[in-house]
Image (tube, rainbow, N blue to C red):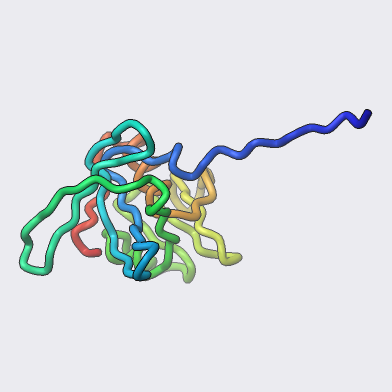
Length: 146
């Protein structure tokens, strides 16, 4: 009898929290849009909010299986208030103590300054950045530019 080890991975949605921006995709028609999670519901359903172009907001529930994380891009960093560093390429800052390095095609959240930097986490999705920023500052990232 073989001794097999099964490695379980945490589902992506286990890292979501209220306030996270996620991508919703209609499985039937292929349409997609960005939504903000406004509540969690039992049985694989969540409450989400979306904003129309005229600023009006709507709320609905949807299946957790129809949402996914939004991959970070350099363009998204700029839209959520990070600024491209004037000193070094591949570096974005927010305030004086937070930065994102995009060297080696990775997004690394860095705390500190150019002399002393601490890489806190490699990031892949915008909700990971939202959660880390909120944990460190107690404030939400502004997503109004997206």
